[in-house]
Length: 344
Image (cartoon, rainbow, N blue to C red; front, top):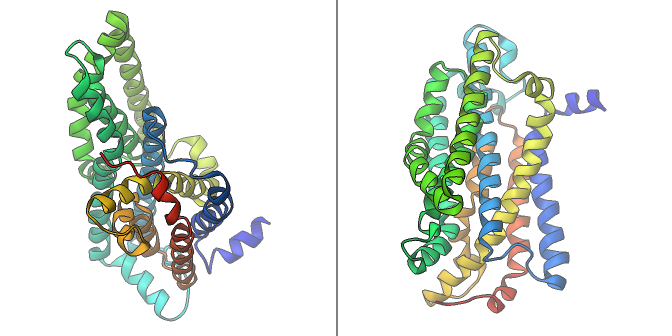
């Protein structure tokens, strides 16, 4: 089995194939089999569920994107050092495209900028649904209510989810500095959110609540610093456990769970997208809802995966089919959204 996958990996990127297969099969089961009988599973106003889905999705997407950037850096470094095997072998236009993507400086700059925009948008746009609910809670909360600071604590959690994968994957080198620039906006918000989070927990649990939050936060930061120091001293790029199961995680686990998380978040976005359309006097159909669903991230993230070397023609074809099937499945259940639209 291992030799089989190694053989087909020369023609198709397995991580993209896993992502597409998971998204297609899950969307079919959810929108063709489950929703028509049981209704939407993940459209909810439960703030705890929304926050959990957002944080998990942010973490997985960040892990996926930083893994793509790290893989590009490794291929480019090896190719410029004269390792011809660093460039995926192939014939025709795909081989020339991959050679240009890996050796030329422009693709690396563009990939960096695209991921920078994606990470920033991921951090700012994804929690909007949670913040809409939090704003209503905050407005109604008296001065003594800890919920007045709930939004800042959510910003702290979201920032941690976006920043942590890069801390683990990148050394403090030129690549590490680029990663730091990518997460600069989340990092600033993270820094500003810490004192407000302390106040939030102090109002929730008194002095012990604040102390516990500070101790846990300090412990996590200390652990990350010690981990990075160990990796640098041992001249390792990834933790031993991740290195041992690196291929498994990059090829199967991360794409699989990222696709599932994005599918769940996409469904959560459907109701708010339909509400926005109705408030604007527009019909709830695929043509109108498509631009709003871009914020769910499936198309931008899939495009980044597709255009990152090595580029495979087979993956291009499969990705187009996947997105067509995905939105066709969504279109089949748009009529059921009318029963859950709640105008303010």
